[in-house]
Length: 129
Image 1 (tube, rainbow, N blue to C red):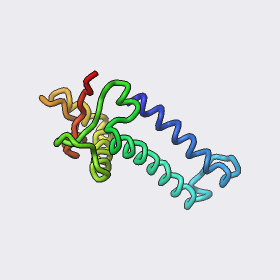
Image 2: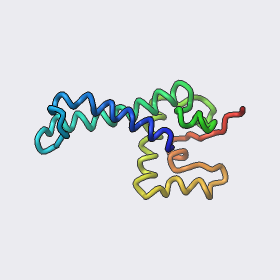
Image 3: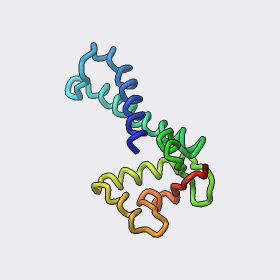
Image 4: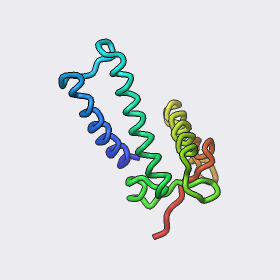
């Protein structure tokens, strides 16, 4: 997750740079430009969805997952579809909102599934060498 967070942060920085000409290089304040702030937040969410969605639907792995030989797949073993990606991301948000409790579920689950695995009918598997 840390590797992917760093990659996502770099993409968010690049996205933020695209908005700087609209603010004269200053920080974007919602009080001064509410519509631009809304578009900016939507762009950050779109980048997050695209980052995971393109990775999971094409290879089943983000770059961070590939480094650890992990792949996410549906319970039937197929690559995720875009609806699967959206369900998994929404469920992962739920796992975070309860202070990471959704991840701790994997410690006691016999199949090592997190809440977002269960809620999206996906699983993380180790890729053989």
